[in-house]
Each structure stands twice: as structure tokens, then as C-alpha cells.
Amino acid sequence: MSNDEPGSGSSDYVEWKGWVDQTPFGLLSAGEAAYFTSELKDVRAGRDGIRDVLEIGYGNGSFLAYCRSKGWNITGTELDPGLVQAGIDSGYEVFAADRMDRLAGRTFDLIAVFDVLEHIPQEAVPAFLIELSGALREGGRMIFRFPNADSWLGNPLQNGDPTHVTAIGYLKMTFFALQSGLEVVAFRGARRHGFATSVANGVYSLVAGPVIAVSAAVKRALYFPGLPVVLSTSNVVCIVRRAGASR
Image (cartoon, rainbow, N blue to C red; front, side):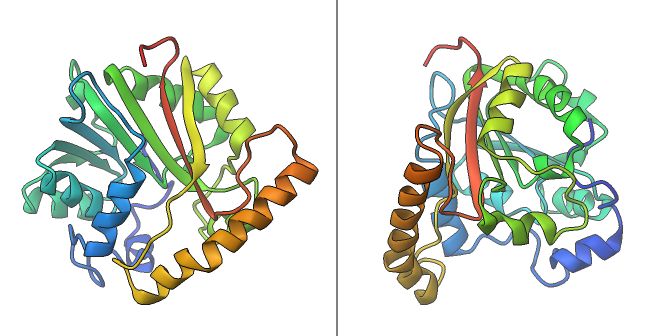
């Protein structure tokens, strides 16, 4: 399975993203830690909560570090050889994206797929999801984050990366889930970074965030009544489980 950016093995892409050289690998800022905690609030994975986590496309390793800080067993995959080596050097159980055979027989409470689906050709997404679902433990969840194709707010993120090949919104994601034997548990805007990130982000969350949310709610009521699309954030988050799995 290829996990994320076609062509992202290029050092140019890693440099452009600011990974490793500009930001130390596995750096977990207070803002990122607060963000991940908020993002996982509605994820209840596995019978005993979250213990074992798999991250697909871990990038610069901030979520790996977050999982380590929580005492979870974290495994990660990446496409770029340099990032794989950086993860190994930092003591993480990580491996190249084309070595998914190393997960044979293993299952996880949570599979995190942040900023990956948009890099996968549309026709390959169902097979990608089916393979991941096979690694879900009973009651497990997958959490995805990707640019919001239902709103113009997602356009800069979707179109700003030359390796993004698939735009995804609510309807397309539910179709992918249906094709893959999965069901959507939640589809919402990505959480906003607050004061733990910076004063500017905190003020934005308190002031601009609610204004945008109200405006988006009005527009949705006018143009998409009854359709749970998200119009207020540039990124969206989707949480899925196996269809028919116990809640």
C-alpha cells in the first residue's frame, strides 16, 4: 500500500513542507498537544479505550510524539526514506509505506490518517480503506483529516499542494465508506487551535471562529438543507468504523 504523496519521496517535497530541517523531527509543541487532545475527544476506540495506534503518513512525527506522551503503543508508516530513518533514529516503530506486510496479524484501536487521502487517486481510495479496516480491532476507529472540498475555504489547502489529486467532501467520503464496508461515525470541521498555540490563534477561536460558524450554518440552511456538509473550516475530520460494528 502506498500511503500518501505520489512523488513525495523527493527531498524537494520534504524541504518544502519544512520537515526535519526547519522543524526537529518529533517535536510536540503545547499547541499541537492541545490540538490532538481536542481532535480525539469524540474517538472512543477499542473495548478498553486507546492502547495501540497506527499512523499512516506520519510526516514530521508530531502525532507519533503525542501518542508516546500518552503512553500508547504507536506504529507509523511513511513514504519518504529520510523520514522513515528519522523515526527509527528517534526510537519509534516505523517503516516504509510499501512494507505494510509487517503489520500482518496485528490490529489497532485507532488508525490515524492525517492529510493523506487527498494524495491518493480516487479510484484507489476504496482499496486503501479496505486494507486499513483489516487492521482495526473490535470497536476500533479510523480518523481522517483532509482539505474541505465542500467549502471554498478548503481550496488553498487542496490546490496549494501539487501532490493533491483527490478532492473530498461529505458525500464523496460517505460513498468511499460504503464501498469499503465502513460507516461514518462523525464528519465535522477540524478543531481550531486555541491559546495553547498562540494568542492570535486563541483570539481567532473566540471571536472569528463563532462568527464564521454562524455564517456557515445560515448558508447551509439556505443552500444545503438537511445535508451535513461543513462550510466553516478549511480542513474536515471524518471518523469511521466497520459497518455494523458495536458502538
